[in-house]
Amino acid sequence: MAVVDRPQNALPTTADTPRPFWRSLLTLRGSAGVRRTARVPWIPIVIISVIVVMAVFAPLLAPQSPIDQTLRDKMLPPVWMEGGKDKYLLGTDHFGRDILSRLIHGARVSLLVALLALTVGGGVGLLIGIVSGYVGGKIDAILMRLVDAAFTFPAILFALLLAVTMGQGLGTLVAAISLLLWASFARVIRGEVLALRQRDFVALAKVRGCSSIRIMLTHILPNVLNTFMVLVTLNIGVVIIAEASLSFLGAGIPPPTPTWGLMISEGRGRIAEAWWVALIPGIAITLLVLSVNLFGDWLRDRLDPRLRQL
Image (cartoon, rainbow, N blue to C red; front, top):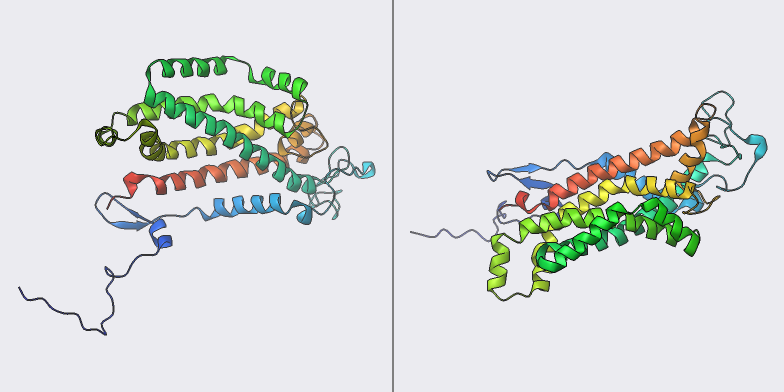
């Protein structure tokens, strides 16, 4: 069969042109091999980006001091309501502190607590879940008994004990929430690993002489990252609410440092007379949690190897 040479000045075809990485990230290939454009969740991405920018540049963006008290301006409603002032766009609390400024600075503290707690607690749970599920035997039994003990121990009581021994602060709060999270991460990840270790690619890796550590790092870990990421996104709201509860009980970051959870705790007793004190940070938490969940679902689909079939 004759071979037809392409002219030197001919334009490259679509098959010859390499697809850039960003285009491959935004396209999915179905089971029939037909490409379709992935729907990028732009609204959640914008909301997350705005909150992150607020947290990073809080001192520059806050119109007022988040801790200075102005008692003559206490309990002022937002600017669009009767009695509101242009100086306080979202109103003030019972100490006359600007809600908007505390909301902006609270984003920094809440995101920092969530990031550290999920990194420490989720990382420990991920490690224990992989080791327990893959190794099995006595190690699995011992680790699972520790998980059961962690579920039965009152997390709030343990956090109060930490506050008494270590004192209030960021370290105490992160340690308490991490101890609250790691057991749930470990149990879910272990269930995933128990199913993965029976797969053919794990058996082939053993035949090739791969060590257990290499199999867990190169074969098991990438296949549980999707589940781990979903757990992280679902637990962001849990962390923020746990921070609020612990701060209210005196085991978290002490006032007047603003956090979203502490703002809700301070305003929940004044819902009837000043609903904006608790509702506005509650809306911020809702938007953040919902946006992270939607973005995590999209990213999970993009990282799922079953959707990247050739």
